[in-house]
Image (cartoon, rainbow, N blue to C red; front, side, top):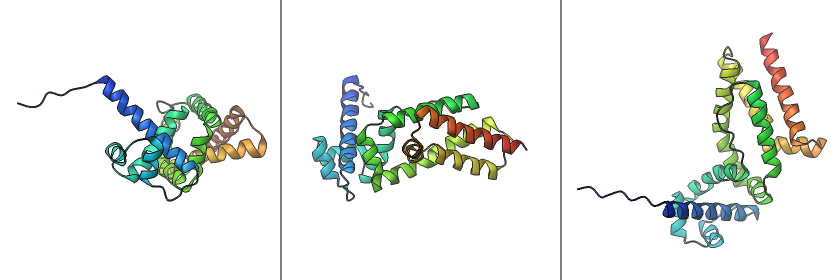
Length: 194
């Protein structure tokens, strides 16, 4: 006789709340410039045991890797399905830039740290694949080489680092940044038609 599975919505909610508290504590520790991040420091900040962190994330690498999806969810930069038209891409980039603008200081500071930057770079591979999938819909006749170059350019144009440059150097709003980025993307797409 196999054990009966038990599912508790309350337990799931508590588990998720604990994960969020741990990840917020991680962001807080990273924001203070702690490069030699320790699990005990995060545990203390979150008010949980070190064992709780290991149960939720496996190890320190798993903990840091979980920060990017947490930040995406927290800032609302989840963009949904892969855009299949230039209009959908425009809409998504506008949404992303507005979320970059509204990201709280804690998340920004955490991702400015060396470990945060590493987490963002690792997540870039996933973003690159999403962009490539979108480009396959927008421009199915791209060669693999063209697809790779275009996707890398679009990825860099839509990072929070580049967004900050548009904002700080030129004083642009999120919508103005989206206009500039989409101008580049449309121009590149037209150039591929010639």
